[in-house]
Image 1 (cartoon, rainbow, N blue to C red):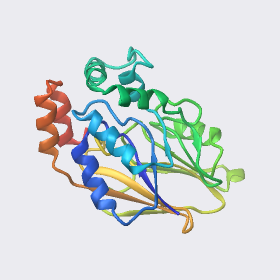
Image 2 (cartoon, helix red, strand yellow):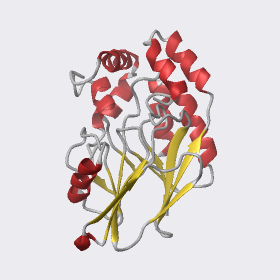
Image 3 (cartoon, helix red, strand yellow):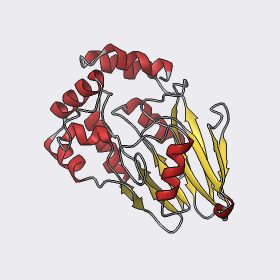
Length: 249
């Protein structure tokens, strides 16, 4: 089975549609790792597109919670909170309820894979370094844990857990990365953000897990950033949200 890995779409329909076009024919089922909305100008279009995909699993992100009223966004910075309030005002009643009904991670997909937004031990915790990754791996219940939240593609690996051999790397954005899943190892993997990358590369990021081949492929896809920027500005959202898309920050 080939799973399309989608994370941190953030109401950017231009990036999302480009990813789906690029991924055509590469997947059988879909996993969505949270933050469908927030920051971008088309929350309803993104939610509707996710629904059309009929994913095997969708979990909530912190911006999803804030937009639908499950969280007050008090932990957000000023710009993020403004975007969350605006998003909440735009949501249709059906899409607001859709977000409210999304489960928190982690969610176990099968014997190989689980998904979370932040970490398996806290859906809102960020994996920014080796210590965060080690705690997440320790809390994971499957050999492969897919996560999002940071908008930073990353691969963490424990080889032969009893030997405590720990590795971590940021994948090369300039090539198609293939991550083989060794049977004696455990993995924590972020395929990157579709709607708002933060690794200095504005291209949308996504992944495909092939559980039979036991590998994950990571992709970067250019999209019409200027269209997404124009929609953000036209919506009256903070200009910084448009500007950062071109910078990948």
